[in-house]
Image 1 (cartoon, rainbow, N blue to C red):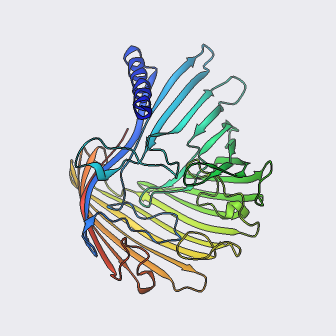
Image 2: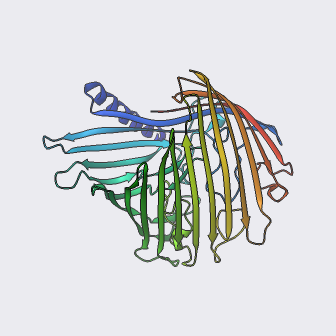
Image 3: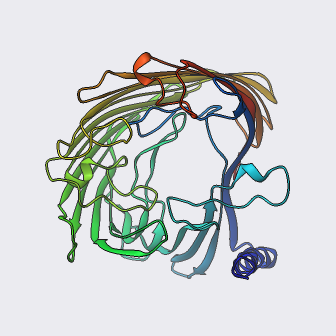
Length: 429
């Protein structure tokens, strides 16, 4: 009965949005999903494998992803004569279970360890824009994807502060824009049966950003600082975390290049996004001596209508002496280097050839360096140059060194090379 009630509630949300859309143009829909069917040929035949090294914040995407869906509605709730605009935004999403393709419906699987087999709210917020006297700023409150900085080929949100909070965004200062957000950085720890363990990490993450600072023609600077502050009491020690981000974006012929330097200490030195991550909590119980440094360069350009190039380089250094430093997790003292690129050639208006190649290397304390090389050629058929939806036929090759044996391929084997192939459909709107 509980599942039926959830299904009816979800249907009501969709029906309400659809009826509003039919009535006027106040509702716009947006979203993203991908679906695929793939198989692994080696080292063990079976379902498609997904290849990434332990201790890394991302992996190269092409032919190396699972299924995902998210759908949202942006509702124009108010439009005043003075130009003020108010919105309500709803987005639901989640992974769905591909093992049930052979019969029946596709059930959703748990998201971020919630133990909830239903789609969850990924965004749920209200905003008010263009209030007279606030320099074109936007006020907002709720759960929001907040100012994500993203690298597409390795699916990495490298400067992101998703979660529940409030803020004032994009105050126009003339030569730059100023934004502030306060996000809930706390959580109650629950056991495998979803029972409260009595361990609570309550905190606030303060995010202050100065963006679009024009320095030279075609180039601008974004600067941000963050502060994770514990509040209340916990059965475990909590610490203050600090992070800093500086990003330089420069136009290049047919695209842009973004170079970012990031530094995090304490709880912010133990966070992939140097803030909250997809709405999960900042690890406030991280020792205060933890430190993280990252340099990331993201390049994307098209020298012609037919050719496209995306590339990324990441170097990251982590110091966390009092946190586990084993290759079975992503914590502890370690370094990470990632290099990769994706080339695309549109040989017809509705078809293109893609080739993605990338290498990851991680080094944990007192352990040999782990290395993974991943190469994927793919044939893509779609609706035009770079448009969606499209369907891809791919073959993925993943090769590891001796130190990484048994740590990348599942089930664990002593084979160095894995091969998967399949089809993937993808769309966003």
